[in-house]
Image (cartoon, rainbow, N blue to C red):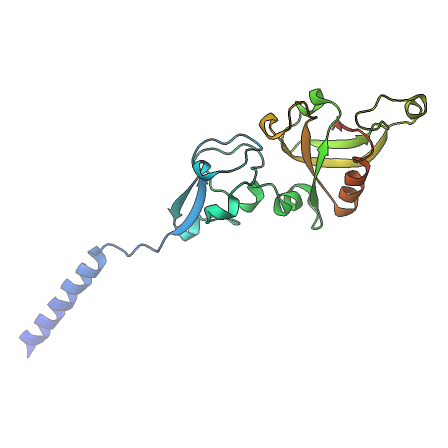
Length: 202
């Protein structure tokens, strides 16, 4: 009887050691989209720009994207390094606008700037004031228009993206996308249809 108990105890010890020595079962990975190469600000994503990687669940960032079809043709906000996980705030859209402006009703507004030189100074995250120049786009200012003082349309707009020249019509003015609260976004969109718009840096 004693010998049987000793044998049973020995077997339990062997099983315990074997259990501790066995490799742990790794949790299933989560597919996450990452940049397949360094991406310049404003790039429209194509199949060659993204790759799917499997990450442990605890390393998946909030808002991570997993399907290439979801990002096809969408533009990145800011530069992206190769291997960086793509999240909703890294793509031009409502989520990025809300994150940049800090208000829940924020929207992204494309604005065609009157001065290409000013656009060259802007980068994603730059805070600017949008100013109506009081001049009809494409027209020379008349005496009446010259008397119209520039007006600040929207203070504190945040630049989301400056569209690359390759995405503009030849000779067209540069386009900048800014994040604004909904009311200001509507105002800027309306005024920019009839007046030239520029920005002042903060």
